[in-house]
Image 1 (cartoon, rainbow over the protein chains, first blue to last red):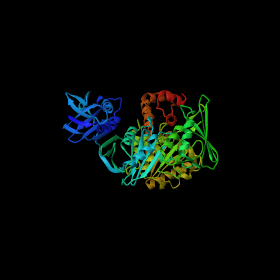
Image 2: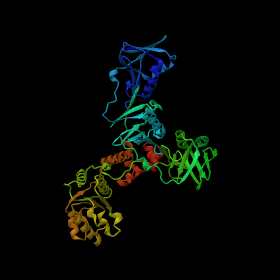
Image 3: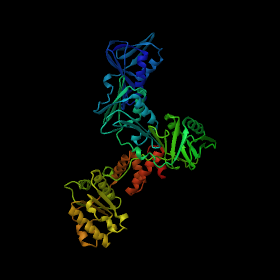
Image 4: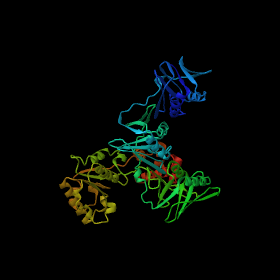
Length: 367
Length: 233
């Protein structure tokens, strides 16, 4: 194997592919990236056995096609620290990979290509294509609510629901739930529901941009594959049933207020400074035209803020984890936000005034 | 903020209805097979299950009804423990259903109107080719039935003794119930709960519900210290 490539052509795919590689590995070869060189193309593959990402890029010159696996992070750190616009030459010599650029030379260890695992190419049952921006918007609007390491494996991921003319994502960690739906020009019969694991969701989002260019999806029974020209992403699916989100969306809320989103977010951020660091509880006191936000901590320090809102109705006091409210205000993009409450023990619904494509349900805290 | 502060959980836990999928059949495989096959063309029209408290008679009857609904059949579960205080009108027209499951039969025995209603219900279901399953704490001949015709009818079908689970079965049952809820219950934690927890299976499974809610609220894994704290042991 011998080829040369510009630093810039290598860096973007390498950074994304190396993102899939876990720092701690069960198999040594999993900390490596697989480099496959053909006449006009260099393909880089990273995997953790759950998520696999292949990035393709164009070399400047190929002298000898071939393949090798080299430590992913070291390769990326070297490429990053080389001067911009550097030309990098790659040669495999006696089982070691030698990188030359200008007056620098690096020799990296390799592991046999045959040891590099392939995610099995399961049968794809459904193929469809979506605008990249649509999928990215759906993921970015809901991914923050995924659980991190819940004992319920199905919460550590995102539900991707595809039905004719509609795509929906749902995530929940048991305290809050995020749902986002968008119309899409797809024909899926019967509807498909897959749970993509947390890591797969975050990596997939990094590949997508806001464009109308297509991303093609292949849905299998155990895997999902996304393809965008330069990248092929494959993720195992979480085997299990996702909770019925419609059961969780509150229908009984009768106290509806509208606030300026940015202003409410700032008020909550400031108040949160003096909330209990562990629980992050804040108290909302809702009254005609005004929302009072209060927090205190074990050191008896207190914060109180008032913000003008559109509201007429009975007063209500309710507690929340302030982080959950700030998360929602951070992903909504309208200027104003609408919040629907019922009582101090029932979940709150947050959305754009009049309802947008996303809905957020947040359970209160007992303070 | 007071020490009692707690995040309330959303209702995203899995339902844990009594179904065959979350019944640990150890020792009772033949009975479960007969019950699941009851709605088939060749199924036994009448089954009688008996067993002590907590062996799973009610679970099996409810599971049979759930399975019937999944197969688009109409089924009715009648817990006489709760319904026995009412007059037996609920048994009228029961032959319109595909399956009638009567639990806690002993609650209405010795009461003339109920025994007669059960006798007629049995005959109507039989004539209509519909299925009946009855559960009681003892076998038909050991029950104190005043109406001789009802007593003889109850011996017409297949009778099964529902055997209680041994320690291995209880361990498997607890793990199964946790798994159906989507919770990973490590072996040592399951053993701890069995050792420390209530003897009655129903109460034991109720502790899983408590743990489900507590771990959703605290976003904690099921470890022995967490179980101790959540169950106040």
